[in-house]
Image 1 (cartoon, helix red, strand yellow):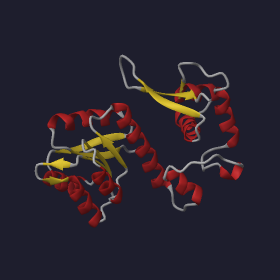
Image 2: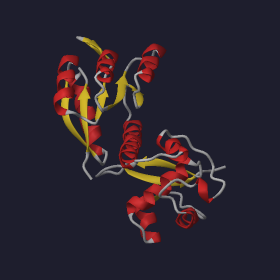
Image 3: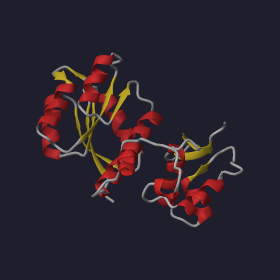
Length: 228
């Protein structure tokens, strides 16, 4: 599976480097360019054709929302996550109207950054694979969740029997949580399959997830039974 192509547009050199490093820590992404001005960002957006842009709001040569509007006006197929120090409601309204995928306020915490990127990765690959949609597919892609009432309510890719087995792993949940790899090993399924079911249980409120940081290597996503 090809990594998602990311363009970073940020005028602060130090922050753009931080965002590059953060992006490369999240599986499934590659940084194809870094622009430190809006004009360079617009040129690189046209030339590199990224799938995702991490966009700052305020630049010496303009306003990030203006670039967002230009991109939308030419119907380029690219998604945007706005990363800004602005805390006013106006820019957020502009960003929502412009169809941004997420809005992160600086200073950026890696756990929040990774959450946004992982959510986008799931959305990106899900929507690329869809040809025809039912309401449950739309709800899943837009993040609308509800408790399933019967077998017909389960989204595509979620088998009730397998879900029951994953659910059973948390009958006596370990305090340190479990990873997708550990669940996959217990049930004899792949890590990717286990993660799909775990994220479904997170969306339904049965589980919660957290990034656990180790001394070396990438942080690990672990799943915990929600306490009532």
